[in-house]
Every structure is written in structure tokens, then in C-alpha cells.
Length: 318
Ligand code: ATP
Image (cartoon, rainbow, N blue to C red; front, side, top):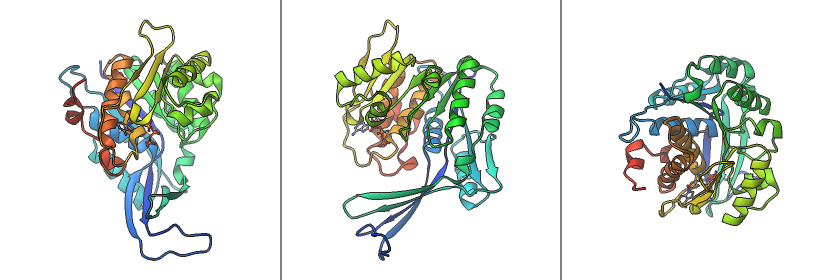
């Protein structure tokens, strides 16, 4: 059986200017440094998955990683496609939009680390059901396929992918970021949902601050029909709960590290989780693997630049 991970989501180019201060309306601030980085939650999660989907000594499995996305017919879109190829990501279901530009995020960062961000979704906002249908139609072994989604592409497309994946017997994992209210009927089609504390609160109206409130939020999501809930809790790790399972819910600790930049920690966690599930790991083991991977990512600067490769994760003891 060949395991596959399908990441469906956004691809952006992040343009960052670091300056002494953020401009007020109408103001121009001179004297910053400029950085351009590949980003977008979908792309970050696809890269995380691809770097971790190597033959592993303990499973022998090697999932392929396919990214389903929409980029513009411009230099950013072409650079993104080249980057996906370098990472070994299958890109045959990435469309180039004739009319809309690639997604761009303009990020200002001041000397205190405060930021302000503007995102032009561009081609990401035109990722449609037809593209998802084409991609899912290519899947020959649904039982060994994990679909990973986020909420930076149109909600009808995300909901369509969830329903289709469910109906075809695939495991669908939703990282509900950025936070949005979701249709309970769609939530019931998920294999797992992976909110952080803020997203868990938006979905359940329970303020998640610790293990007790994470348990309450997970229970609430179970009553909404989600069988598996993984709430990421930053440096504390992740709370995992499966409805009707013999495995009791647990807070799995994050390996202690000195964090320098948590950008894309959640993306790293989700890409790693999807790979581990596709390899056949049990949910709790997959979450432990994802905690290890994400703990490495926070020790490095940047988004995709911080994402670890498989041998680094396997080198951390359980
Ligand atoms: P971000 O928006 O920064 O990408 P997030 O809010 O989506 O992250 P978090 O819950 O902050 O998600 O982090 C995801 C996972 O990353 C955590 O469950 C944990 O495993 C790991 N992690 C985050 N911060 C730390 C840290 N300081 N030390 C170790 N691991 C961390």
C-alpha cells in the first residue's frame, strides 16, 4: 500500500520589512531591511510534510506528499512551483491562474517585534471544487490517504474537500486556522481537528488555558461530531482526545527547547501529524511525533526555513 498525504491550501509570498516603527496611516517610514520568504499555511504544511516523509526505520513507510493549490501566472507563482519541486512535493494539481496574481502577504515588523500584516489572497481565493475534485479523483487508495486542510482558501472549497474525502473513506484532518466558525455537519465528516487555543475557543466558546479547559473544549468538539481532537497548546505541547477510544485523553508534552521564533510551529505540527498518520501511527504516537517536529521548528528563525527534516526528528528520544 502506498500512503499519501494531500495538502490542500494556500501558497503566499511573504514580503517582510523590518523597521524602527510601523507607519501610521499616511506615513512613510524609511530605513528598513527587506526579506522575501515563501509562505501560506498550505505551502508551509506541504513543505513540513515533504521533509518528514522519508523512509523511517521504525515504519518502513514513505508517504508521497501532493499539494493542491492555485498560484498566479507571475514570478511569485513560478518561484513557488520551483520550491515545491526542490522539496519533492508532487505539484500536478497546482493550477496557474490566468487572471489573479499569486497570494502575497505584506508584513511590517517594528523594533519591538510588533507586526502588522496585509494579505492579498489573489489566486488562493480562486481555488475551487473542480480542482479539488480532480485531485481527489486521482487517489487510488483512499484508506491510506490523509487529506490536510486549513482555512486560507475559500470555505466552500474546504467544505467540499472534507465531504468528498469523508465519503471516499479518506482521513481528513482540518487545521482550522485562521479561526472561522464552521458548519457542524461538515465537522462531523472530519477524522481530526487541530485547533490552537484561540481557534478552540472560537469553535467551542470555551476559553482554553490549561489541560482542564482543553478537555472541556475537546468534549464539546466530540459532541459536535468530531471523533478526534488535537488542541495545540504552544510550549505545553498538545492535548489529544479520541471519542469512544480505549486510549484515554492526554496532554502530550512538547520537548523543552529554547524557542527563538514560533512562526509556522502550527504548520510544522500539522504537516508532521499528517505524515505520521499516513505512515500508520496511532493518533497519540502521531501527536507525539508532531510535538517533536514542531519543537525543532521553534528553535529556528523563519517559516519554511525552520521546518525540520526527518532524521532530526527521529533523533529526539520519545
Ligand atoms: P503558530 O501560529 O506560531 O504557528 P499555533 O498557535 O498554530 O502556532 P501552537 O500551539 O503555538 O500553534 O504550537 C504548535 C505546536 O508547536 C505545539 O503543540 C508544540 O508542540 C510546538 N511548540 C510551540 N511552541 C513551542 C515551544 N516554545 N517549545 C516547544 N514546542 C513548542
